[in-house]
Length: 330
Image (cartoon, rainbow, N blue to C red; front, side):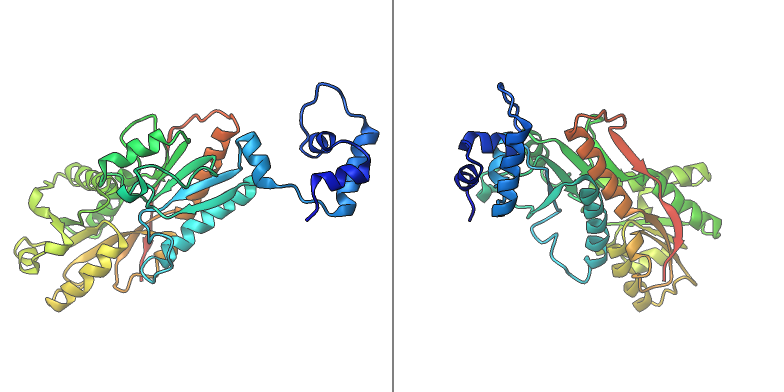
């Protein structure tokens, strides 16, 4: 391996001069262009490669973003999450490559008790991008992020703090759009189907569902909010449900076969609409409509705004929300 001393000997200058030239460091005494050319030529001829890690440690800037997933298994390629991870990574890498930044994928275990409640593995990251994390499940998580000392950008879910930086879908607008599409299709008893996770995201989507029903002069009663894990299909029939807003595609995939087993025809008896991202529109295995979030575009936007922050550019919108569009599923 070629060392600085080798370059210095070939260029007939001191090691400190080589270091200053190759690192483009500020100097009190100017280095002549002739000397700079000699050092750079010697480095090229010897094939010298600078130690990027050491240089980054000196500057305390690594041009690297740490990406935190929703769990230790988040970045594993599993059938049920493949399309989500693929689209999210597309936006992530598109933004990072355009801005000349590297990416570190963090396992999601950084705040576990055995990890000491601290982000031990983010020292090489200039900032954190929190992707699809369920922020409501752990009261200590947001505090840990805040205490990390790194700029944080939230993607998809975000805390209630208006100063928190976020790029996310407009979930209230999505809830209204999904519900209005069922109303336009003639549904008059529209239930909302959710699960216990992602409470921040699901609460915003539920608020949009409530707004759309109220604007249509209909009550959004608590009996119409159903947990897919505890759903009684007989109760669904009893309530006269003719439309269901499913708050993500996993809920839709869980619900559809249960309705079929109970003899409920979709869309003959009940119309379904699901929240999906662009890459999963055709993944749904039951006839239904969908409201679609531009996931890759949201993630890329988050990267660009986080890099803007690192580079000292003003961030005018603390929380940028992207509208859903209406689309057909399978």
